[in-house]
Length: 417
Ligand code: ADP
Image (cartoon, rainbow, N blue to C red):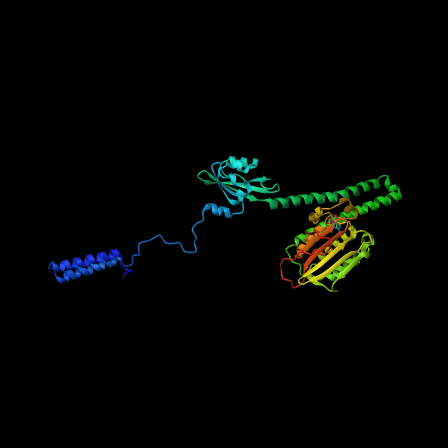
């Protein structure tokens, strides 16, 4: 009852009882007094019963936190955001303060951002197309700046980091330019010799034979280049499809030695195989792994000193297979090591071209290793030689980070590619 009748109801009820008592005391009929009592009680009940207690502001359910202040929300974004009041910076989130400096608060936005393209966009007051800003922060960073009015003369400025897509686009443009140049050079040579053969040199058998050999060599160079370009795009196209063939890596190494026996001035005789067992099965792509072996062993044959051994070893350590190809060549200076797997990067372009290199061998190796979720490390020391380590997963290995190759050789500078 206490829950049904409010405190005001109790007071009203007491007034009704007292009124009924007075009616009875004044000598009115008992019926009239009783009627007054029952009617009054019913009226009190009717006005209070069923009525909700007076609405207090409902507390929020525990799962709904109170709204966070705007600057905390903006600080949680990892891209720079400014709120301008007129021309001045009213709020700069953490990322904006990191990029532009803490002093920007209260500054004119055109001074805070200090970029001609930004100044032009900020000078307007309405919505405009976003602009690209280069060189803000680090020299190779690229931003896309958007400005949107948010009412009361305020505007929101958002800087989106486009450095990744910009770098990818630049790489693509460079790659097309490099590939065209690499193809154009032998093509120009072929056209020149064919023209000369068609003129006077075609009459002289010795000269004709010499020029035809050059044409043939240059055509082969183009063929190697086109083959490597096609391999690269095939491997890239398959990069997200894990290879699932059962491959015996030890048998592949044996076959590679046989196939390279007569290549590179007969250096095949210097290849020394050091397998731990005769059969090392794994899940892989046999064609790509064979290409990886040809490229690595081929490089060791090309760049190793004539007559020195080329050691190819394959070991299994727990969950990992480790393939090492080591030569005793002139080695590679440390500043070149991080760039060796870039397309067309050569330490000595003249030497690479003269021995038939395309400049794509290690880029292909890197992509094959990535597709096999493996790891590629190159260690080299000028005058001593180069050791390339490929670490792959053995069958049944759980997915995880492959440990770095141990630098248990005199070639201490191991560079992960
Ligand atoms: P290339 O077709 O020129 O050999 P790669 O991509 O295979 O291209 O190698 C890139 C460059 O790395 C080579 O031009 C060469 O300068 C250097 N390089 C690769 N392997 C070795 C090695 N075993 N010893 C010395 N230098 C090497």
